[in-house]
Image 1 (cartoon, rainbow, N blue to C red):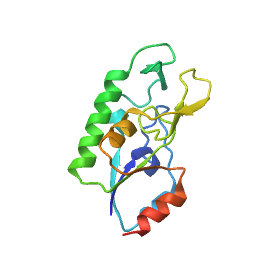
Image 2: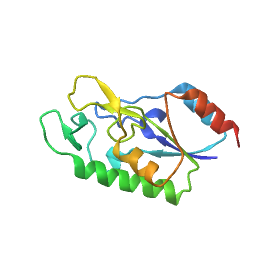
Image 3: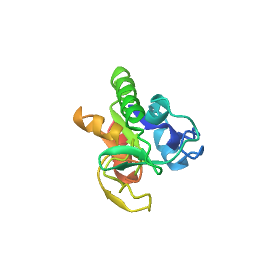
Length: 148
C-alpha cells in the first residue's frame, strides 16, 4: 500500500521547534508498505525551526499575530500534489497541527486548548476525499494497513 505520512512522524526534524514526533510503533506498522513523507509546512517554504502557529479567526497566525496563511495554503497545495501524483491510498497525519490536524486543532489562543477542526492540508485531503487518519488512531491505522 502507498501511504503518505507526516514527515515528523517518521523522525524528520521538521516540526516548528526543530524536533520530530517519530513513532517507532508507526514505523513498524509501515514495514512492507511504500511510504511517502510529506511536510506541508516545509513544502510551503517555512523554515525549521519557526514560530508556532495556530488558526486564529480562520487565518493561520503566529502568536505575535503575523499571518502565515499563504505558506500554509501553498504547503497544503504542494503536499496534496505529491499525494495525488504518487497515488497514495492512505495519509497518516500528525494530530493537532494547523497543517495536518484532522479532527482537532488548537483554538487559536496559544493556550493548549483543543477544538474540533482541521488543518489546511487535512482540509485539502478531505475535499478530495482522500482517506486520512490521525496518528493517535493506531487501531484504525492497523486495520487499514492490514486490508492490503
